[in-house]
Length: 589
Image (cartoon, rainbow, N blue to C red; front, side, top):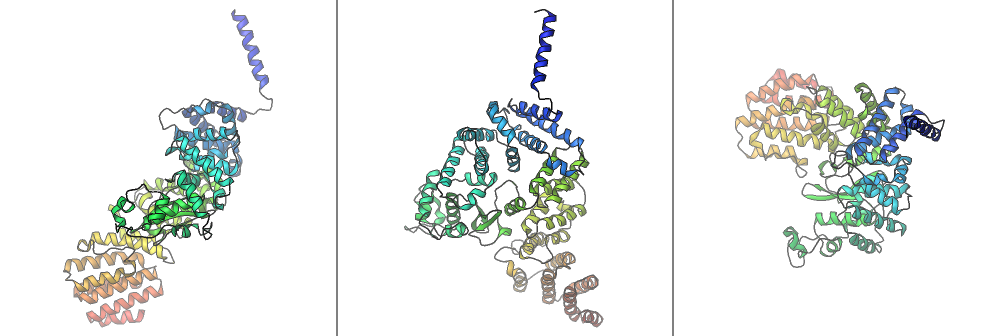
Protein backbone atom coordinates (compact mmCIF):
# COMPACT_ATOMS: atom_id res chain seq x y z
CA UNK A 1 0.00 0.00 0.00
CA UNK A 2 1.46 3.38 -1.07
CA UNK A 3 1.56 6.42 1.20
CA UNK A 4 -1.48 8.05 -0.42
CA UNK A 5 -3.67 4.98 0.10
CA UNK A 6 -2.45 4.67 3.69
CA UNK A 7 -3.40 8.30 4.32
CA UNK A 8 -6.90 7.80 2.87
CA UNK A 9 -7.44 4.64 4.93
CA UNK A 10 -6.36 6.41 8.11
CA UNK A 11 -8.72 9.33 7.46
CA UNK A 12 -11.64 6.97 6.88
CA UNK A 13 -10.85 5.20 10.16
CA UNK A 14 -10.72 8.47 12.08
CA UNK A 15 -13.99 9.54 10.52
CA UNK A 16 -15.60 6.23 11.53
CA UNK A 17 -14.37 6.61 15.12
CA UNK A 18 -15.69 10.17 15.31
CA UNK A 19 -19.09 9.03 14.06
CA UNK A 20 -19.14 6.38 16.80
CA UNK A 21 -18.82 9.08 19.46
CA UNK A 22 -22.18 10.73 20.29
CA UNK A 23 -22.33 14.35 19.21
CA UNK A 24 -23.32 15.50 22.70
CA UNK A 25 -20.37 13.77 24.39
CA UNK A 26 -18.61 16.41 26.50
CA UNK A 27 -14.89 16.58 27.26
CA UNK A 28 -15.73 15.47 30.78
CA UNK A 29 -17.48 12.38 29.44
CA UNK A 30 -14.42 11.60 27.37
CA UNK A 31 -12.31 11.83 30.54
CA UNK A 32 -14.64 9.38 32.31
CA UNK A 33 -14.61 7.09 29.28
CA UNK A 34 -10.84 7.22 29.31
CA UNK A 35 -10.86 6.27 32.98
CA UNK A 36 -13.12 3.28 32.30
CA UNK A 37 -10.85 2.20 29.45
CA UNK A 38 -7.87 2.42 31.79
CA UNK A 39 -9.77 0.42 34.43
CA UNK A 40 -10.19 -2.42 31.94
CA UNK A 41 -6.43 -2.69 31.50
CA UNK A 42 -6.08 -3.83 35.12
CA UNK A 43 -2.94 -1.69 35.54
CA UNK A 44 -3.43 -0.51 39.11
CA UNK A 45 -0.80 2.24 39.13
CA UNK A 46 -2.10 3.82 35.92
CA UNK A 47 -5.68 3.65 37.18
CA UNK A 48 -4.67 5.37 40.41
CA UNK A 49 -2.68 8.01 38.52
CA UNK A 50 -5.42 8.77 35.99
CA UNK A 51 -8.08 8.93 38.71
CA UNK A 52 -5.96 11.34 40.73
CA UNK A 53 -5.29 13.52 37.69
CA UNK A 54 -8.98 13.69 36.90
CA UNK A 55 -9.81 14.73 40.48
CA UNK A 56 -7.09 17.35 40.64
CA UNK A 57 -8.15 18.81 37.29
CA UNK A 58 -11.74 19.14 38.49
CA UNK A 59 -10.65 20.63 41.83
CA UNK A 60 -8.59 23.21 39.96
CA UNK A 61 -11.65 24.33 38.04
CA UNK A 62 -14.08 24.58 40.99
CA UNK A 63 -13.93 26.95 43.93
CA UNK A 64 -14.11 25.30 47.31
CA UNK A 65 -16.71 27.86 48.33
CA UNK A 66 -19.03 26.19 45.84
CA UNK A 67 -19.16 23.05 47.96
CA UNK A 68 -22.57 22.01 46.67
CA UNK A 69 -21.18 21.65 43.16
CA UNK A 70 -18.38 19.40 44.42
CA UNK A 71 -20.69 17.22 46.48
CA UNK A 72 -23.17 16.85 43.64
CA UNK A 73 -20.53 15.68 41.15
CA UNK A 74 -20.92 11.91 41.25
CA UNK A 75 -18.17 11.31 38.70
CA UNK A 76 -15.75 13.37 40.75
CA UNK A 77 -16.65 11.37 43.88
CA UNK A 78 -16.17 8.05 42.12
CA UNK A 79 -12.81 9.09 40.67
CA UNK A 80 -11.73 10.30 44.09
CA UNK A 81 -12.49 7.00 45.78
CA UNK A 82 -10.97 5.03 42.91
CA UNK A 83 -7.78 7.06 43.30
CA UNK A 84 -7.57 6.18 47.00
CA UNK A 85 -8.43 2.51 46.57
CA UNK A 86 -6.06 1.82 43.70
CA UNK A 87 -3.27 3.87 45.30
CA UNK A 88 -3.48 1.49 48.29
CA UNK A 89 -3.44 -1.61 46.10
CA UNK A 90 -0.56 -0.28 43.99
CA UNK A 91 1.74 -0.46 47.02
CA UNK A 92 1.75 -4.25 46.69
CA UNK A 93 3.90 -6.26 44.30
CA UNK A 94 2.54 -7.33 40.90
CA UNK A 95 0.04 -4.48 40.91
CA UNK A 96 -2.14 -5.80 38.10
CA UNK A 97 -5.67 -7.11 38.63
CA UNK A 98 -6.71 -9.78 36.14
CA UNK A 99 -10.38 -9.62 37.11
CA UNK A 100 -10.53 -6.16 35.54
CA UNK A 101 -10.01 -7.77 32.16
CA UNK A 102 -13.71 -8.64 32.44
CA UNK A 103 -15.12 -5.59 30.63
CA UNK A 104 -18.66 -6.24 31.80
CA UNK A 105 -17.46 -6.30 35.40
CA UNK A 106 -15.60 -3.01 34.90
CA UNK A 107 -18.70 -1.40 33.43
CA UNK A 108 -20.68 -2.61 36.45
CA UNK A 109 -18.10 -1.12 38.80
CA UNK A 110 -18.36 2.23 37.02
CA UNK A 111 -22.16 2.09 37.24
CA UNK A 112 -22.05 1.63 41.03
CA UNK A 113 -19.97 4.48 42.51
CA UNK A 114 -20.89 3.40 46.04
CA UNK A 115 -18.57 0.41 45.68
CA UNK A 116 -15.32 2.36 45.77
CA UNK A 117 -16.75 4.76 48.34
CA UNK A 118 -17.44 1.89 50.74
CA UNK A 119 -14.09 0.25 50.02
CA UNK A 120 -12.25 3.51 50.67
CA UNK A 121 -14.15 4.05 53.93
CA UNK A 122 -13.20 0.55 55.06
CA UNK A 123 -9.58 1.29 54.09
CA UNK A 124 -9.40 -1.70 51.74
CA UNK A 125 -5.99 -2.36 50.24
CA UNK A 126 -5.73 -6.02 49.33
CA UNK A 127 -4.90 -7.37 45.89
CA UNK A 128 -7.62 -10.00 46.22
CA UNK A 129 -10.37 -7.56 47.20
CA UNK A 130 -11.77 -7.07 43.71
CA UNK A 131 -11.05 -10.69 42.81
CA UNK A 132 -13.38 -11.92 45.56
CA UNK A 133 -15.99 -9.31 44.65
CA UNK A 134 -15.75 -10.38 41.00
CA UNK A 135 -16.16 -14.06 41.88
CA UNK A 136 -19.28 -13.37 43.94
CA UNK A 137 -20.64 -11.06 41.22
CA UNK A 138 -20.22 -13.81 38.62
CA UNK A 139 -21.82 -16.35 40.95
CA UNK A 140 -24.78 -13.99 41.45
CA UNK A 141 -25.28 -13.63 37.67
CA UNK A 142 -23.89 -10.09 37.60
CA UNK A 143 -26.54 -8.93 40.09
CA UNK A 144 -25.50 -7.42 43.43
CA UNK A 145 -27.26 -4.63 45.28
CA UNK A 146 -28.39 -3.52 48.72
CA UNK A 147 -27.48 -5.82 51.59
CA UNK A 148 -26.08 -8.45 49.23
CA UNK A 149 -23.65 -5.92 47.80
CA UNK A 150 -22.58 -4.88 51.30
CA UNK A 151 -22.15 -8.53 52.22
CA UNK A 152 -20.09 -9.22 49.09
CA UNK A 153 -17.88 -6.21 49.84
CA UNK A 154 -17.46 -7.48 53.41
CA UNK A 155 -16.35 -10.86 52.11
CA UNK A 156 -13.96 -9.10 49.73
CA UNK A 157 -12.46 -7.11 52.60
CA UNK A 158 -11.64 -10.31 54.48
CA UNK A 159 -9.38 -11.37 51.61
CA UNK A 160 -6.44 -9.74 53.39
CA UNK A 161 -6.65 -12.45 56.09
CA UNK A 162 -8.42 -15.38 54.40
CA UNK A 163 -8.08 -17.24 51.14
CA UNK A 164 -10.57 -16.17 48.45
CA UNK A 165 -12.39 -19.51 48.64
CA UNK A 166 -12.89 -19.07 52.40
CA UNK A 167 -14.23 -15.55 51.84
CA UNK A 168 -16.79 -16.82 49.38
CA UNK A 169 -17.74 -19.67 51.70
CA UNK A 170 -18.55 -17.14 54.45
CA UNK A 171 -20.67 -15.17 52.00
CA UNK A 172 -22.56 -18.32 50.96
CA UNK A 173 -23.12 -19.42 54.56
CA UNK A 174 -24.57 -16.11 55.70
CA UNK A 175 -26.62 -15.63 52.54
CA UNK A 176 -28.23 -19.03 53.08
CA UNK A 177 -28.74 -18.33 56.79
CA UNK A 178 -30.36 -14.99 56.02
CA UNK A 179 -32.73 -16.45 53.45
CA UNK A 180 -33.66 -19.19 55.92
CA UNK A 181 -34.42 -16.47 58.53
CA UNK A 182 -31.84 -17.76 61.00
CA UNK A 183 -30.22 -14.38 61.67
CA UNK A 184 -31.09 -11.44 63.91
CA UNK A 185 -32.29 -8.11 62.40
CA UNK A 186 -28.90 -6.43 62.88
CA UNK A 187 -27.61 -8.46 59.95
CA UNK A 188 -29.31 -6.53 57.17
CA UNK A 189 -28.16 -3.19 58.65
CA UNK A 190 -24.45 -4.04 58.44
CA UNK A 191 -22.03 -1.93 56.43
CA UNK A 192 -19.15 -3.64 54.57
CA UNK A 193 -16.66 -2.90 57.37
CA UNK A 194 -19.04 -4.55 59.85
CA UNK A 195 -19.47 -7.57 57.58
CA UNK A 196 -15.68 -7.74 57.53
CA UNK A 197 -15.63 -8.08 61.33
CA UNK A 198 -18.36 -10.72 61.13
CA UNK A 199 -16.53 -12.74 58.47
CA UNK A 200 -13.18 -12.55 60.28
CA UNK A 201 -14.44 -14.86 63.02
CA UNK A 202 -12.21 -17.76 64.04
CA UNK A 203 -15.24 -20.06 64.26
CA UNK A 204 -15.61 -22.63 61.50
CA UNK A 205 -18.77 -22.72 59.44
CA UNK A 206 -19.62 -26.04 61.05
CA UNK A 207 -19.42 -24.43 64.50
CA UNK A 208 -21.65 -21.56 63.40
CA UNK A 209 -24.22 -23.97 61.97
CA UNK A 210 -24.16 -25.96 65.23
CA UNK A 211 -24.57 -22.73 67.22
CA UNK A 212 -27.60 -21.71 65.13
CA UNK A 213 -29.23 -25.02 65.98
CA UNK A 214 -28.21 -24.76 69.65
CA UNK A 215 -29.77 -21.31 70.17
CA UNK A 216 -32.94 -22.10 68.21
CA UNK A 217 -34.52 -23.35 71.45
CA UNK A 218 -33.24 -20.45 73.59
CA UNK A 219 -36.31 -18.22 73.73
CA UNK A 220 -34.59 -15.59 75.90
CA UNK A 221 -31.93 -15.12 73.22
CA UNK A 222 -33.17 -12.08 71.26
CA UNK A 223 -31.62 -9.40 69.10
CA UNK A 224 -31.51 -6.61 71.69
CA UNK A 225 -30.21 -8.73 74.60
CA UNK A 226 -28.12 -11.20 72.59
CA UNK A 227 -24.81 -10.13 74.12
CA UNK A 228 -26.04 -10.56 77.67
CA UNK A 229 -27.83 -13.88 77.16
CA UNK A 230 -25.02 -15.38 75.05
CA UNK A 231 -22.75 -15.19 78.10
CA UNK A 232 -25.06 -17.61 79.92
CA UNK A 233 -24.41 -20.35 77.37
CA UNK A 234 -20.88 -20.90 78.71
CA UNK A 235 -20.76 -22.13 82.34
CA UNK A 236 -18.42 -20.07 84.51
CA UNK A 237 -15.95 -22.60 85.93
CA UNK A 238 -12.47 -22.18 87.38
CA UNK A 239 -11.76 -25.93 87.42
CA UNK A 240 -12.99 -28.79 85.24
CA UNK A 241 -14.53 -32.05 86.43
CA UNK A 242 -11.04 -33.44 87.09
CA UNK A 243 -10.13 -30.48 89.27
CA UNK A 244 -7.73 -28.99 86.70
CA UNK A 245 -7.53 -25.21 86.86
CA UNK A 246 -8.59 -23.13 83.90
CA UNK A 247 -5.20 -21.43 84.16
CA UNK A 248 -3.55 -24.69 83.12
CA UNK A 249 -4.48 -23.83 79.55
CA UNK A 250 -5.18 -26.71 77.18
CA UNK A 251 -5.18 -29.22 80.00
CA UNK A 252 -8.41 -27.69 81.32
CA UNK A 253 -10.05 -28.70 78.03
CA UNK A 254 -8.34 -32.11 77.95
CA UNK A 255 -6.16 -30.67 75.17
CA UNK A 256 -9.07 -30.74 72.72
CA UNK A 257 -9.36 -28.09 69.94
CA UNK A 258 -11.32 -25.07 71.16
CA UNK A 259 -14.81 -24.87 69.67
CA UNK A 260 -18.14 -23.38 70.70
CA UNK A 261 -19.31 -26.87 71.57
CA UNK A 262 -16.31 -27.29 73.88
CA UNK A 263 -16.98 -23.95 75.58
CA UNK A 264 -20.56 -25.02 76.28
CA UNK A 265 -19.46 -28.40 77.62
CA UNK A 266 -16.43 -27.38 79.68
CA UNK A 267 -17.13 -23.74 80.47
CA UNK A 268 -14.34 -21.46 81.60
CA UNK A 269 -13.80 -18.00 83.03
CA UNK A 270 -14.16 -14.56 81.45
CA UNK A 271 -12.09 -15.37 78.36
CA UNK A 272 -14.15 -18.42 77.45
CA UNK A 273 -17.40 -16.63 78.28
CA UNK A 274 -16.61 -13.60 76.12
CA UNK A 275 -15.10 -15.47 73.18
CA UNK A 276 -17.88 -18.03 73.26
CA UNK A 277 -20.54 -15.31 73.43
CA UNK A 278 -19.01 -13.63 70.38
CA UNK A 279 -19.22 -16.94 68.52
CA UNK A 280 -22.93 -17.29 69.27
CA UNK A 281 -23.52 -13.68 68.20
CA UNK A 282 -21.76 -14.34 64.91
CA UNK A 283 -23.90 -17.41 64.37
CA UNK A 284 -26.86 -15.03 64.39
CA UNK A 285 -25.22 -12.52 62.05
CA UNK A 286 -24.07 -10.02 64.69
CA UNK A 287 -20.44 -8.82 64.49
CA UNK A 288 -18.36 -8.68 67.64
CA UNK A 289 -14.88 -9.27 69.03
CA UNK A 290 -13.16 -9.85 72.36
CA UNK A 291 -11.44 -6.98 74.20
CA UNK A 292 -9.31 -6.77 77.32
CA UNK A 293 -10.06 -5.03 80.61
CA UNK A 294 -7.84 -5.08 83.71
CA UNK A 295 -7.74 -8.74 84.77
CA UNK A 296 -10.82 -9.42 82.67
CA UNK A 297 -11.95 -10.30 79.14
CA UNK A 298 -15.05 -8.59 77.73
CA UNK A 299 -16.32 -8.13 74.18
CA UNK A 300 -17.82 -5.53 71.86
CA UNK A 301 -20.91 -6.22 69.74
CA UNK A 302 -23.43 -4.43 67.54
CA UNK A 303 -26.66 -4.14 69.50
CA UNK A 304 -28.64 -2.00 67.06
CA UNK A 305 -28.11 0.16 63.95
CA UNK A 306 -25.23 2.57 64.68
CA UNK A 307 -24.90 1.26 68.24
CA UNK A 308 -21.94 -0.80 69.48
CA UNK A 309 -21.81 -1.78 73.16
CA UNK A 310 -19.63 -3.80 75.54
CA UNK A 311 -20.75 -7.26 76.63
CA UNK A 312 -19.60 -9.05 79.81
CA UNK A 313 -18.55 -5.58 80.87
CA UNK A 314 -17.02 -4.61 84.22
CA UNK A 315 -14.89 -1.51 83.77
CA UNK A 316 -16.25 0.29 80.70
CA UNK A 317 -14.67 1.84 77.60
CA UNK A 318 -12.04 3.84 79.47
CA UNK A 319 -10.34 0.74 80.82
CA UNK A 320 -10.68 -1.40 77.70
CA UNK A 321 -8.00 -2.43 75.21
CA UNK A 322 -8.22 -3.92 71.73
CA UNK A 323 -10.22 -2.93 68.72
CA UNK A 324 -11.39 -3.49 65.18
CA UNK A 325 -12.98 -1.54 62.37
CA UNK A 326 -11.89 1.02 59.77
CA UNK A 327 -10.63 3.66 62.23
CA UNK A 328 -7.66 2.79 64.39
CA UNK A 329 -7.31 4.13 67.90
CA UNK A 330 -8.51 3.17 71.37
CA UNK A 331 -11.29 0.63 71.89
CA UNK A 332 -14.04 3.26 72.11
CA UNK A 333 -13.35 4.48 68.55
CA UNK A 334 -15.89 1.90 67.34
CA UNK A 335 -18.64 4.03 68.91
CA UNK A 336 -17.54 7.01 66.86
CA UNK A 337 -17.52 5.16 63.54
CA UNK A 338 -21.14 4.25 64.16
CA UNK A 339 -22.04 7.77 65.33
CA UNK A 340 -20.40 9.31 62.27
CA UNK A 341 -22.38 7.10 59.89
CA UNK A 342 -25.61 7.92 61.72
CA UNK A 343 -24.94 11.66 61.68
CA UNK A 344 -25.99 14.13 59.02
CA UNK A 345 -23.94 14.66 55.88
CA UNK A 346 -21.64 11.71 56.59
CA UNK A 347 -21.19 10.98 52.89
CA UNK A 348 -20.41 14.61 52.05
CA UNK A 349 -18.01 14.89 54.97
CA UNK A 350 -16.17 11.73 53.90
CA UNK A 351 -15.91 13.02 50.32
CA UNK A 352 -14.47 16.38 51.43
CA UNK A 353 -11.89 14.52 53.49
CA UNK A 354 -10.80 12.29 50.62
CA UNK A 355 -10.77 15.20 48.16
CA UNK A 356 -8.66 17.20 50.59
CA UNK A 357 -6.08 14.43 50.68
CA UNK A 358 -5.77 14.59 46.87
CA UNK A 359 -5.76 18.36 46.39
CA UNK A 360 -2.33 19.70 45.28
CA UNK A 361 -3.22 23.13 46.68
CA UNK A 362 -2.48 23.24 50.46
CA UNK A 363 -4.93 26.07 51.04
CA UNK A 364 -7.67 24.24 49.17
CA UNK A 365 -6.85 21.01 51.02
CA UNK A 366 -7.22 22.79 54.38
CA UNK A 367 -10.52 24.31 53.30
CA UNK A 368 -11.86 20.92 52.26
CA UNK A 369 -10.86 19.38 55.59
CA UNK A 370 -12.54 22.18 57.50
CA UNK A 371 -15.63 21.76 55.36
CA UNK A 372 -15.62 18.05 56.18
CA UNK A 373 -15.83 18.88 59.89
CA UNK A 374 -18.59 21.43 59.33
CA UNK A 375 -20.64 18.77 57.60
CA UNK A 376 -19.98 16.16 60.30
CA UNK A 377 -17.66 16.94 63.25
CA UNK A 378 -17.38 13.23 64.12
CA UNK A 379 -15.16 12.55 61.09
CA UNK A 380 -12.20 11.19 63.07
CA UNK A 381 -9.81 10.69 60.11
CA UNK A 382 -9.97 14.44 59.44
CA UNK A 383 -8.91 15.15 63.01
CA UNK A 384 -5.99 12.79 62.50
CA UNK A 385 -4.87 14.80 59.46
CA UNK A 386 -5.16 18.07 61.40
CA UNK A 387 -3.25 16.56 64.33
CA UNK A 388 -0.47 15.42 62.02
CA UNK A 389 -0.09 18.97 60.71
CA UNK A 390 -0.07 20.59 64.12
CA UNK A 391 2.27 17.93 65.53
CA UNK A 392 5.11 19.38 63.45
CA UNK A 393 4.89 22.70 65.28
CA UNK A 394 6.88 23.56 68.37
CA UNK A 395 5.07 24.41 71.54
CA UNK A 396 1.76 23.06 72.73
CA UNK A 397 -0.68 25.96 72.53
CA UNK A 398 -2.05 25.07 69.09
CA UNK A 399 -2.03 21.38 69.92
CA UNK A 400 -4.06 21.83 73.08
CA UNK A 401 -6.41 24.25 71.33
CA UNK A 402 -7.06 21.51 68.76
CA UNK A 403 -7.64 19.04 71.60
CA UNK A 404 -10.32 21.31 73.08
CA UNK A 405 -12.16 21.38 69.74
CA UNK A 406 -11.69 17.62 69.43
CA UNK A 407 -13.36 17.11 72.81
CA UNK A 408 -16.38 19.08 71.62
CA UNK A 409 -16.64 16.86 68.54
CA UNK A 410 -16.40 13.67 70.59
CA UNK A 411 -18.24 14.35 73.87
CA UNK A 412 -18.23 11.70 76.59
CA UNK A 413 -15.35 9.74 75.08
CA UNK A 414 -12.52 10.52 77.46
CA UNK A 415 -10.52 7.47 76.38
CA UNK A 416 -10.43 8.88 72.86
CA UNK A 417 -9.29 12.28 74.16
CA UNK A 418 -6.44 10.55 75.94
CA UNK A 419 -5.47 8.63 72.81
CA UNK A 420 -5.60 11.81 70.71
CA UNK A 421 -3.47 13.74 73.19
CA UNK A 422 -0.82 11.08 73.65
CA UNK A 423 -0.70 9.40 70.22
CA UNK A 424 -1.75 12.01 67.66
CA UNK A 425 -0.74 15.52 68.73
CA UNK A 426 3.00 14.94 68.86
CA UNK A 427 3.50 16.55 72.27
CA UNK A 428 7.13 16.47 73.36
CA UNK A 429 6.67 15.27 76.92
CA UNK A 430 10.33 15.80 77.77
CA UNK A 431 9.81 19.53 77.26
CA UNK A 432 6.25 19.69 78.55
CA UNK A 433 4.84 20.38 82.00
CA UNK A 434 2.71 17.26 82.28
CA UNK A 435 0.89 18.57 85.36
CA UNK A 436 -0.31 21.62 83.44
CA UNK A 437 -1.22 19.55 80.37
CA UNK A 438 -3.10 16.54 81.75
CA UNK A 439 -6.00 18.67 83.10
CA UNK A 440 -7.01 19.15 79.45
CA UNK A 441 -8.32 15.58 79.71
CA UNK A 442 -10.99 16.70 82.17
CA UNK A 443 -14.39 18.06 81.18
CA UNK A 444 -16.65 20.61 82.83
CA UNK A 445 -18.83 18.05 84.61
CA UNK A 446 -15.79 16.00 85.69
CA UNK A 447 -17.28 12.74 84.45
CA UNK A 448 -16.00 9.50 85.93
CA UNK A 449 -14.29 8.53 82.67
CA UNK A 450 -12.59 11.92 82.33
CA UNK A 451 -11.36 11.83 85.93
CA UNK A 452 -10.06 8.29 85.39
CA UNK A 453 -7.97 9.20 82.35
CA UNK A 454 -6.64 12.30 84.10
CA UNK A 455 -5.81 10.50 87.34
CA UNK A 456 -4.03 7.54 85.79
CA UNK A 457 -1.79 9.93 83.88
CA UNK A 458 -1.24 12.07 86.95
CA UNK A 459 -0.41 8.98 89.00
CA UNK A 460 2.13 7.75 86.45
CA UNK A 461 3.83 11.17 86.36
CA UNK A 462 3.78 11.49 90.16
CA UNK A 463 5.53 8.13 90.53
CA UNK A 464 8.29 9.38 88.21
CA UNK A 465 8.74 12.51 90.29
CA UNK A 466 8.51 10.68 93.62
CA UNK A 467 10.68 7.61 92.87
CA UNK A 468 10.17 6.18 96.36
CA UNK A 469 6.48 5.81 95.56
CA UNK A 470 7.01 3.85 92.34
CA UNK A 471 4.80 0.77 92.46
CA UNK A 472 3.14 2.02 95.65
CA UNK A 473 0.85 4.61 94.10
CA UNK A 474 -1.13 2.89 91.32
CA UNK A 475 -4.33 4.41 89.99
CA UNK A 476 -6.15 1.28 88.87
CA UNK A 477 -9.69 0.01 88.65
CA UNK A 478 -9.40 -1.43 92.15
CA UNK A 479 -7.80 1.65 93.72
CA UNK A 480 -9.46 4.56 91.91
CA UNK A 481 -12.06 5.06 94.63
CA UNK A 482 -9.51 5.04 97.45
CA UNK A 483 -6.45 6.49 95.71
CA UNK A 484 -5.88 9.43 98.06
CA UNK A 485 -6.92 7.37 101.10
CA UNK A 486 -4.28 4.76 100.24
CA UNK A 487 -1.68 7.43 99.55
CA UNK A 488 -2.25 9.07 102.93
CA UNK A 489 -2.37 5.71 104.71
CA UNK A 490 1.04 4.80 103.30
CA UNK A 491 2.52 8.04 104.66
CA UNK A 492 0.84 7.44 108.01
CA UNK A 493 2.09 3.87 108.33
CA UNK A 494 5.66 4.35 107.11
CA UNK A 495 8.60 6.54 107.94
CA UNK A 496 8.80 9.09 105.15
CA UNK A 497 12.11 10.90 104.73
CA UNK A 498 12.13 14.61 104.08
CA UNK A 499 13.12 14.24 100.42
CA UNK A 500 9.89 12.37 99.71
CA UNK A 501 7.91 14.99 101.64
CA UNK A 502 9.38 17.78 99.55
CA UNK A 503 8.80 15.86 96.33
CA UNK A 504 5.20 15.21 97.31
CA UNK A 505 4.48 18.87 98.00
CA UNK A 506 6.20 19.83 94.74
CA UNK A 507 4.01 17.43 92.76
CA UNK A 508 0.81 18.70 94.39
CA UNK A 509 1.77 22.32 93.92
CA UNK A 510 2.45 21.68 90.23
CA UNK A 511 -0.83 19.84 89.74
CA UNK A 512 -3.24 22.12 91.60
CA UNK A 513 -3.07 25.28 89.41
CA UNK A 514 -4.41 23.38 86.41
CA UNK A 515 -7.22 21.88 88.48
CA UNK A 516 -8.69 25.01 90.05
CA UNK A 517 -11.63 25.17 87.63
CA UNK A 518 -12.55 21.56 88.40
CA UNK A 519 -14.36 21.58 91.71
CA UNK A 520 -14.49 17.89 92.65
CA UNK A 521 -10.99 17.00 91.53
CA UNK A 522 -9.23 20.01 93.03
CA UNK A 523 -11.12 19.46 96.30
CA UNK A 524 -9.69 15.92 96.56
CA UNK A 525 -6.18 17.18 95.90
CA UNK A 526 -6.49 20.02 98.42
CA UNK A 527 -7.90 17.69 101.03
CA UNK A 528 -4.96 15.30 100.67
CA UNK A 529 -2.49 18.21 100.57
CA UNK A 530 -3.82 19.57 103.86
CA UNK A 531 -3.81 16.18 105.59
CA UNK A 532 -0.24 15.40 104.48
CA UNK A 533 0.98 18.77 105.74
CA UNK A 534 -0.82 18.25 109.03
CA UNK A 535 0.68 14.77 109.36
CA UNK A 536 4.23 15.99 108.87
CA UNK A 537 3.86 19.39 110.61
CA UNK A 538 7.05 20.51 108.86
CA UNK A 539 7.46 24.25 109.40
CA UNK A 540 9.34 24.77 106.12
CA UNK A 541 6.72 22.89 104.08
CA UNK A 542 3.89 24.64 105.94
CA UNK A 543 5.39 28.04 105.19
CA UNK A 544 5.82 27.08 101.55
CA UNK A 545 2.22 25.88 101.39
CA UNK A 546 0.98 29.10 102.97
CA UNK A 547 2.68 31.10 100.22
CA UNK A 548 1.28 28.80 97.53
CA UNK A 549 -2.29 28.81 98.84
CA UNK A 550 -2.29 32.58 99.32
CA UNK A 551 -1.14 33.13 95.73
CA UNK A 552 -3.97 31.03 94.28
CA UNK A 553 -6.68 32.15 96.67
CA UNK A 554 -7.38 35.21 94.52
CA UNK A 555 -7.04 33.29 91.24
CA UNK A 556 -9.80 30.78 91.94
CA UNK A 557 -13.03 31.78 90.17
CA UNK A 558 -15.13 28.91 91.47
CA UNK A 559 -16.49 29.89 94.92
CA UNK A 560 -16.44 26.30 96.17
CA UNK A 561 -12.81 25.84 95.11
CA UNK A 562 -11.92 29.16 96.73
CA UNK A 563 -13.61 28.00 99.93
CA UNK A 564 -11.62 24.74 99.86
CA UNK A 565 -8.38 26.67 99.31
CA UNK A 566 -9.24 28.87 102.28
CA UNK A 567 -10.12 25.88 104.47
CA UNK A 568 -6.82 24.17 103.66
CA UNK A 569 -4.98 27.45 104.15
CA UNK A 570 -6.61 28.00 107.53
CA UNK A 571 -5.38 24.57 108.66
CA UNK A 572 -1.85 25.52 107.54
CA UNK A 573 -2.01 28.94 109.20
CA UNK A 574 -3.22 27.38 112.43
CA UNK A 575 -0.28 24.96 112.44
CA UNK A 576 2.04 27.90 111.81
CA UNK A 577 0.24 29.96 114.45
CA UNK A 578 0.07 32.72 111.84
CA UNK A 579 -2.91 34.87 112.93
CA UNK A 580 -2.66 37.27 110.01
CA UNK A 581 -2.87 34.46 107.47
CA UNK A 582 -5.61 32.76 109.47
CA UNK A 583 -7.69 35.93 109.35
CA UNK A 584 -7.19 36.24 105.58
CA UNK A 585 -8.32 32.68 105.00
CA UNK A 586 -11.28 33.09 107.34
CA UNK A 587 -12.48 36.10 105.36
CA UNK A 588 -12.30 34.07 102.13
CA UNK A 589 -14.46 31.21 103.43
